[in-house]
Image (cartoon, rainbow, N blue to C red; front, side, top):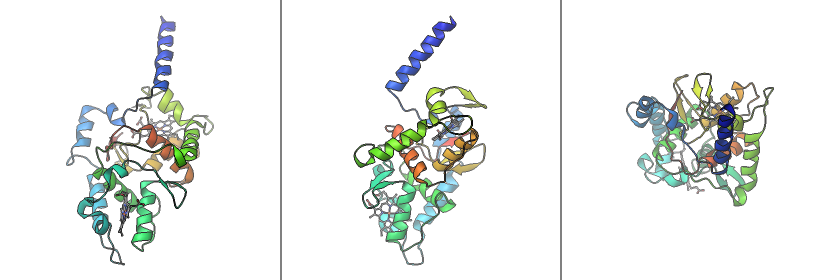
Length: 252
Ligand code: HEC
Ligand code: HEC
């Protein structure tokens, strides 16, 4: 009997690897939390969205504001483009994240200084942009000039870290569905980011979540905005191609 279960387990896992189907972390939520996530009034991350919205319309010292180019409430933004980050930047010859894009706009088009990666303002603006793009289907490019960066991200995802020699894939591919310290392991998808964590009552960016996962198995994290995390974001976002944006999602 036990052997039969083991066999079924192996077969199920093998087929999961071949035809990988992305599943949003929201599928693992209780109905109550999912309702809260979808309700614009009940979602506890809405103050962060509002903060991002206020920054978006704020005039800087040089007389520029995001909404000057992107429209009131972002009505001229290309929402399907927001769902495609990281995108390849021809000038820099590397992938850029949505946060990188916001800094490019600030430096090159607003004569302003760049924000520090993952600072409060940046996460506010990013949350607002992604909130506007809710429902857009994630389509991240992985071929052409993106190939080497995608491969580097994939390698990182499978690299064993720390004394426990664990990789992202160990938890989010092989053991997903299992329980770990009171939490069900999901696929580690990024379509809800930045997310609101009920355990910390805070909005958490994707790179911080990477660091928290690495911390959790006592591995040394990288820096927010580092090349490593940008490549990892590229791989993780592309792994969710086909899912829709659900920012700001709610998680434990
Ligand atoms: C002077 C005009 C201008 C201002 C001001 C500006 N941007 Fe942009 N932004 C652009 C242009 C042009 C692009 C297209 C860039 C490209 O394709 O390389 C862009 C692209 C974007 C994108 C990608 C989605 C899209 O519609 O292409 C986002 C998100 C974005 N900007 C956010 C911001 C934010 C946030 C601010 C304020 C901090 C800002 N921008 C300020 C001109 C501007
Ligand atoms: C020891 C197991 C473990 C490892 C290894 C691990 N994680 Fe996680 N991860 C978790 C747990 C537990 C959560 C929170 C519960 C959940 O959402 O499944 C989580 C959540 C996430 C989420 C958020 C998912 C969502 O729906 O909001 C992302 C993204 C993520 N991990 C990425 C990674 C990456 C990238 C790595 C490798 C650097 C990694 N994780 C390594 C256990 C792990």
